[in-house]
Length: 199
Image (cartoon, rainbow, N blue to C red; front, top):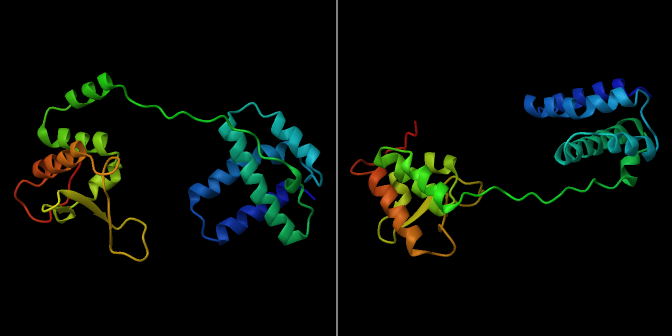
């Protein structure tokens, strides 16, 4: 069985399932080198393991290719009753990634890089609470409960509630509460239900 042919079938099935173009491109980019390296679709794990071991790309890319191959072979197994050698191949190890963080001096430089109170309020809110930039952009004045000085963000992935209460920081830290209060006083000084416009 030709690998290129089965790859076209697989991509067609992903397209028919209405996957995004970005996902389709991801599968093509991850599986095309495999189709070139193994023109005939391997029935045993050894050729696939050799292909993975010869990859000179990053650990993350190798992991992505492994995941794409698992999905690809699962499809072929169901569609063509073809043996699935990926069941006998262990996932490649990935070193633990240490996320980059800012030192206190770098945070200070970041805050000093803006020259207006609104942008400084937004940066302070993000730095002190860990809230995502997209969540800050979706905040409305009605999202702050002045009586408790807590912020809650509406529409976050919950199927059962109209809103989720977000407690910023670890637990309820005084610094975080003051940050939220400061940010909303700056961002919403007197208007009602105004959406933040981050430019």
